Amino acid sequence: MNEHISSRIIPFVSTRTYRDAFMVHPKHGIRLSDANPGFKDPDTGKASAANEVAADNRKLHGLQYVMFAEHTRSLLICLQGLDAAGKDGTIEHVFDALNPQGARVHAFKTPSLDEAAHDFLWRAHNQCPAKGEIVIFNRSHYEDVLIARVHDLVPKSVWSKRYELINEFEKGLSLAGTTILKFYLHISEGEQLKRFKKRLDDPTRHWKISESDYAERNFFTQYLTAYEDALNKTSTPYAPWFVIPANHKWFRNLVVSKIVVETLDALHMTFPPTIVDIDDIRRKYHADEEAERSETR
Figure (tube, one colour):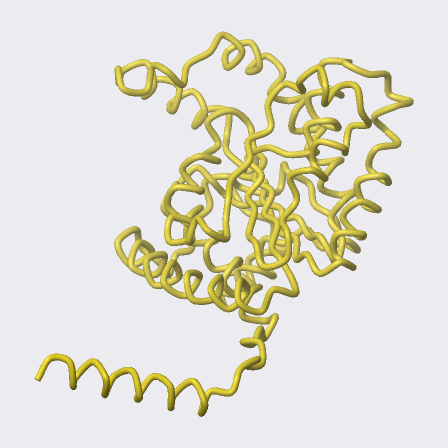
């Protein structure tokens, strides 16, 4: 893996515009060999990043409140990455301030018999956010152009047509008011092995270990090829991909939180108009308040 992040990205990083820095621009695309998974902003340290993420959590909580009240749009976040890339950790640290009344996480695993009996997008559409809701996909409909491709679960004539179907699916969500952000958490093969070791050394993490983790390492290069194609074929203005350097967990969290908050800020959401006569409600309140005082005298 190249030790330097793409030269196209460096100027953006120096000005702290993470959204532009790590977006897969539809016109330019990306080569994952040019994206350093160990990159971190030289102007930011671990401690200051944690403070910024905490501040962004508070902002995100407020933005979610307005989105829930406005009730005209929604947010869909797709988290993808190889095993141990940090999807669970990102959810824990970046989105822990969300109110569960208006947010949820859905993890995509092996399709059930019912899911497999439908088209590949059916199970994804069923989990998409309602108006006013934030939904995080832990893995997503992209598994059908990743694992399905790497392991030949369907022929190339099938999975190769799915990119266009995914684009149309996401375009439809966007037109219906859903903002879509897709994050590929980019780790190196060496970092993945280090994280597997931590799981082995920590009994509280043994539950995370599966035979498939190590079996899938044999396909590391094939997965990178599949991801690169998916990123380049499905990063669109209405559903952009972001390649997040994820070897350093603290920097991963910082970049994702900044992009999410910046995106929601740019929506300029507002509270809906009042549907009651506030003055009348206020008069009733004061009357009740006075009656309460009279009873306690």
